[in-house]
Image 1 (cartoon, one colour):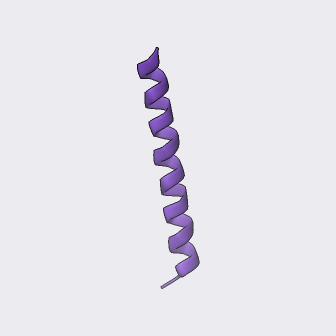
Image 2 (image 1 turned 180 degrees about the vertical axis):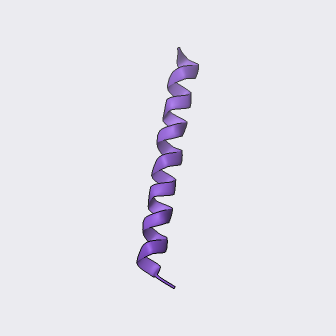
Length: 30
């Protein structure tokens, strides 16, 4: 069980969802 690998994966996953959410809001505003 690699804790660093799990934390890195979760961090990238959260950043990806956060950026995707911003893009969706940007498209909706226009």
